[in-house]
Amino acid sequence: MTQDRVVPDPLDAYCTQLDHVFHRPTQREALRLYLQGLLLGTERHKTATGIAHTAPGKAGSQHKAAQRLQWFLSESTWNPDELHQARLELMRRGSATAPSADAVLVIDETGDRKYGTHTAHVGRQYLGSLGKVDSGIVSVHVLYDTPQAYFPLQLRPYTPAHHFPRKTNDTDSD
Image (cartoon, rainbow, N blue to C red; front, side, top):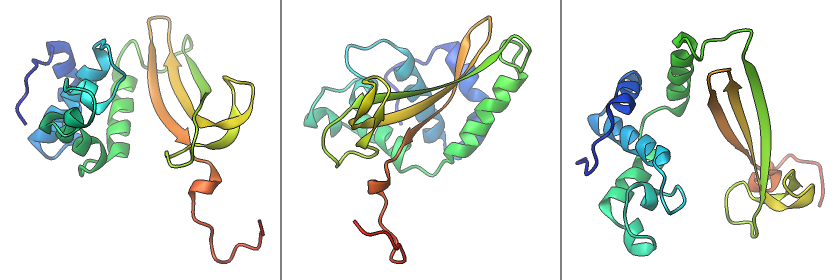
């Protein structure tokens, strides 16, 4: 993967500590570009085409930089749980992020209205942003808050039951 942007030294130093999770140099480079794209302010939402700096729409999504990023995120062979554990270990070793009496673990659910049922995780569920049950997507954010800064730990969307196939031995009837 050739890189059009230079990754800043502090980000590269951070990613170097996670390189052991990735088995290929292209995966290591993709992580750097992905994190850089998330950290940089852009005019577009944080999409693969926006992070890869390609034109929005179908033409941009077909650009090789956007395709490489999409492959890295959805099809590559690295283990997200291994990356998550390596990131948490870095936090435990850091003086600003190590567990302490001054830190707080924050768990927050966020719901956004979405229509349709084809998008993953969308369904009728309680949406805190609306204060009622409606069609939408819910995610749970977990972060570690210290006097120096806060650090996101994990983000998992909630998947409504209708996205899972019914088992043949279910006794419930609709």
